[in-house]
Image 1 (cartoon, rainbow, N blue to C red):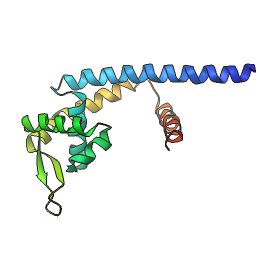
Image 2: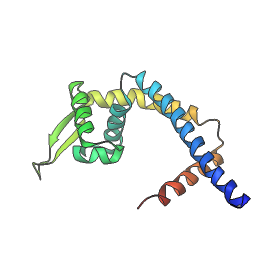
Image 3: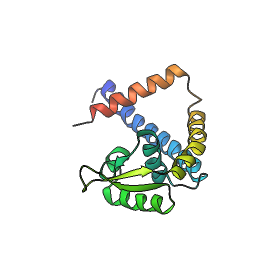
Image 4: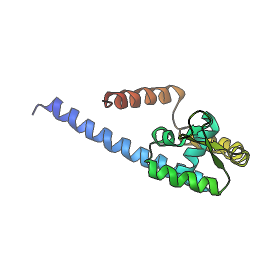
Length: 148
């Protein structure tokens, strides 16, 4: 094997390890932040989706936050019990049920989302704006290259 090919393979493996460790560290900090607000990361993701994008068909929530339909049903049930969201039938197709954020859920997100956003900004403040843009571009390049 040529030296340059060997180095390229080593750099690919090192890239994977560094990406995985960074992602794990960021996820841990996010979990800590979200837990301080009395939610788990999945509950927060569902509320954040509804808060920013409006009512969503329950069947579609899983696709948007990368969760199985069984897990989404469980999370929606928990959030409904906490009165943060409610289920609504679609008037045009009664088979479709939407999740809708309640006033209590919106008030919660009005309070915690700015704090969460600030925590995320703090995690990435080690990077200059140009470095953040480069990171986004590179991660998209890898991600898009792996799609079908």
